[in-house]
Image 1: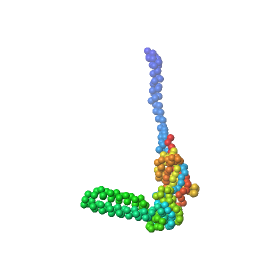
Image 2: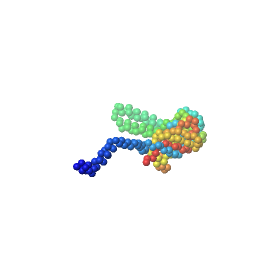
Image 3: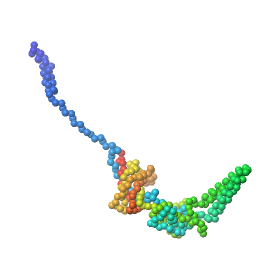
Image 4: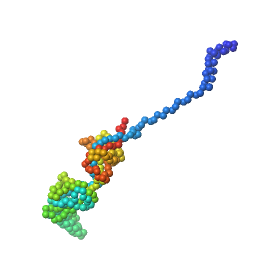
Length: 292
């Protein structure tokens, strides 16, 4: 009977079960796999800036200079300032004799304004005692016409000197304190005036070169990658071994329709006055990398 039960348990594999259970009780648990840290992939914002090398040129820093033209067409009769000379605001630069203003015609227009003013005042006094609205309106119209004629003959905000045998003379003056950086006025030279509608020549440039602008040409493909404040390293052909550092201060909102480039501007300190307007240069701009 016993041998029959053991053989039955053997057929069920109970003996093997006891051995497996006992082995499981004494065997140590397997060690968990070591955690592997996988770094996050770099994002576009974390990417390193790329360097764009673009051509450019040195120009005047516009807020620091003033360009002087003659408002009148005429002949230069006297020059009082020369290139390299220091001038103060309001100091005379050159005197120009002009035929643009006819003295007799101008004086007649001035007299017409005075007469029309008196007539309007007289009509206004008469209207205080009786109805003369029509006469007062007519006097006001004559006064308006006379003032319009005088305004058409006068050149506003300039100092015309009388008398002049052939017309009037006008003295150009410096609009600010500074140095005469450019002078192209010579006694006897005939110049066009800005009021004539012609291409008036530039007679003087007054200002300082302690700071200059650099205008760079960036291909329109890269315009959106150039941001305000980006670092700029400028190298000139005149000084190949030197580098001048600045920051992007302005990016043109549109591209040049012919050259398909966007203008980018930065300022450079120029205390030793080594950099001169008109110099050609190249610049390295730290630009955002192209998106993946």
